[in-house]
Length: 555
Image (cartoon, rainbow, N blue to C red; front, side, top):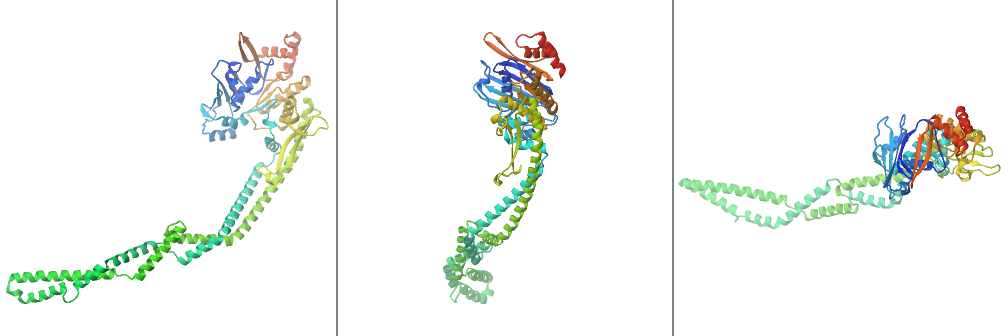
């Protein structure tokens, strides 16, 4: 609930600190005293647009700070703060501060952490529910009517949401499968052609490296063939250097015994013959290794070029071609087996839709029954509020299938008819400000709603009524406050004011050219005097004081 409101330099308010408690709080004062300023200030906390005109004349900025206490932080507030990365300790009050500059700029803070105005608007529905003469939020907004009826009727909204989610998932899977099959069919001819090419090519992983190596070796052999042929002629034949060395060795062998130096010469010559023979063997082996078949080189080059051309065509590496062929085959298989898969998915989607329709029809029946009970409950509240000629109806209409959703197949809206024979229409279309507020009060009492906003505010709900009607309004406001926890009412009615657990008096005073608005919490004596003023006017009479006492005693 709202526990404290601090205002600085807002229009006529220089500095104001108000503490609020549970139950019904009433705000009274002369017309023009500044009650609307309080609501405007609170509107800043709720994310309303910052107007430069709200800043007190002569000041460069204004600020409003509101403190809210919760036994347990509402889930919607906790989720919004978590999304905004704003931490709040358990048991810690929620502090919202808004600064407005004279040039129209504004800043917002939540527990002294910078926040966006969008976050304030997201928090607002769980903080304050304001029912004013021109307010289009809360119960007036038809977007929330279905949720209110579901709470009242006990609709299984959770089961309905799960059924819709399952149906939506099944339809999404079916749509995805259909798109895949349609795309595959569109590409089928091209896939067949590409797969035929790859199948004929029969690529093998690692083949490119092997072919490139073999091609390089054969190209080397081709380049060295002339040199090797020349060397072969040098080492082969009877006139080759090696043959001459061997003849020389045989001749030297016959005379080597004649002198030690000849023996050494023979040893050296033998070594030369051995080395030359080894060289001859290596040359022969090299020639064999580098021998190439021109046709084999051509075949290797052709194969290599074909593989690389296919890779360029499909924008992949050569080693990826085998996997690409398998992928193409799988896509073609998917086309062939796609119809069977679609049949299964279509059956699943039909089953999910049937389950959703069953849940939605049950919700529809619950809403119809709940609407009838709610209409009767609201009707019982209208007569005491001087709305006995009015009629209230909860409209539950079946929507076309393209508008079905997680909340079912129903459109829900609260309608009223203010005169006998008049057509039903939305709340804010045909009701005056005072009538609208009383309709909302009757509806709130009938709904017995729990879990709404922390604080409910009614702005001049008693406008244009008095006597028994005002007393009935006060009684229902007090009853509603006891149930909801905290309710604030701006009122001109002494009957309503007498029902308040706290009474705030708003006054405007002028000093020279400076006008200020102040708010004070009245004590019992001050409260009796204010209610007497509301009863008698400018001059408070003893009779008015006595009547005020009777009003206060009656509650």
